[in-house]
Length: 138
Image (cartoon, rainbow, N blue to C red; front, side, top):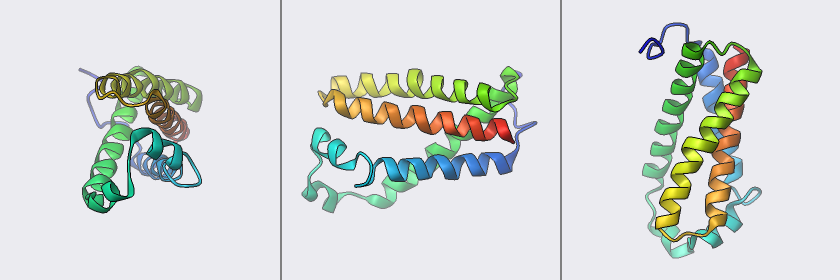
């Protein structure tokens, strides 16, 4: 488990990667991004949004986003990925295979639209790829 260490992590890079990946998500799920399509395909209504606990939603998003970026940094260090191209590839693969795979499994059994899976998977792939680029630059 030589990769499971915080040694060599550039915490400024982690912070920047977190902020940028969070901003990507902010846009992705905004009315300027894919919100309307995602909302309609996911069956999210205005009534559901009124009852939503947005504090918990954003809190979970922040917590798991920062943990994902830290884990990506740890994996990059452990695998010897030291440049932005390697970070791009590793982040994109993790987003597509692990995050996208989880979306496909959960959304498939929840009988959600494939469009929801595609939007969520594309978001995670792009956000982690960009985080990998940033980590590779630091």
